[in-house]
Image (tube, rainbow, N blue to C red; front, top):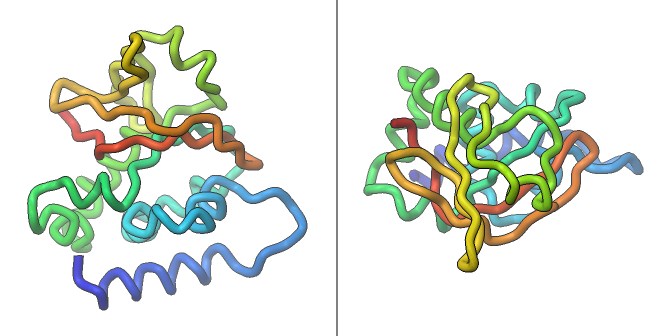
Length: 163
């Protein structure tokens, strides 16, 4: 992703987030504050999903890190961030959002989950851990139960792609 595009998106997101207050951080503020979700934050801004994920929720977000986005083929992120691909980007991002606050103890009991975009993601749990994804590939959950005022974040190691 070009530095200029990422910088512009981060500035726009920072303006949306506003200054820190004493209230608990929401999903977006929690992700931005972690420092490892710059690409996700830029994508949420480009897709017009910041206000949604700052809403009442609750939401469960399977959040891919910057490293997860870097695993995509070269040029994929830049292409998705273009205004003419907003609908595609939004569809990809909504695969990572499940309505409700689903903690790890409950995720492991599920075989699948309906996403905010209307699709279904598969969930598998075994001795090696929990994975979530589609027929295009499964992402490993690397950290769970990061609480926010409007939901919970589970960190994943790859971007979930539509079938």
